[in-house]
Image (cartoon, rainbow, N blue to C red; front, side, top):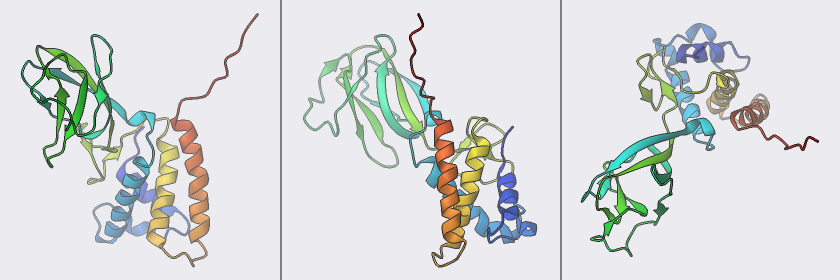
Length: 220
């Protein structure tokens, strides 16, 4: 089951003390503009708050002889490894101390930042074809009905890009954070209780999102 953007607006409108009228929470209505803006803001904040395992993805790159620069994935690179040897490349910062004409089997990399077209620079320059995988945290928490990933909800049938086992726990957190962002008045009697409830729900979500810790037992 997938939780859509419209479902989130409906939940928000039906939540006590949300500050939103449930009748106004229709995706295409003018009255829902503020709620949609706050919802997307809360989504970006929560999904990037921690490095959850479900955000981890891999993208292959084929290193070609004589070519040093390669397109990075849209996300935060955690590591790059050789798929044949399983050896991980060393991240070396800006690469200023390295000979940029050296060739051989790549053993390190850095990022050449030149927005919007940053590149992964392999060191040394590949002397033949090598296969690598980039391990990274992706930043797109929304998927549309065509399967394309997005940074935020733009259509009513867009849905949360997350394992189905976590969707409802995350929805509770997202709705509560949206309510807190919409309130912004620390003197309001509902502001602190909303944040407190969010923190409790967030703890539950974090436990569910990370691998279980199983104590090893010796059986005789």
